Image (cartoon, rainbow, N blue to C red; front, side, top):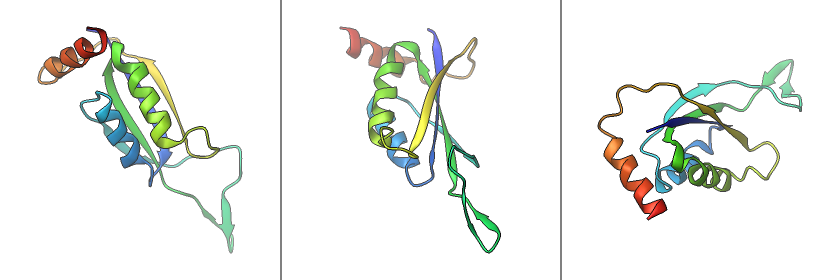
Length: 115
């Protein structure tokens, strides 16, 4: 099997929504990392203090045949067509260890998608 990593950078209040959508589309889990970021628009300030919305990075390790389906679910659930909601991108993964307990689940999802 080949795997890819979907990284989704979203505001904290959207994280659960996109992870739930990804799981419904076939993801077996996610790792969430709190983060900070900056975008094209300046953050708001209040008496000289910068007010930044918390950002999360949702990392999902996915069997390559399921990536498009799961990425589409994330985009829809996160409403990425609206400005400032988040971004998601996919990077290749060379090697994986420790997924033995999830391999059967991936195989079943791939079978459902193609047969």
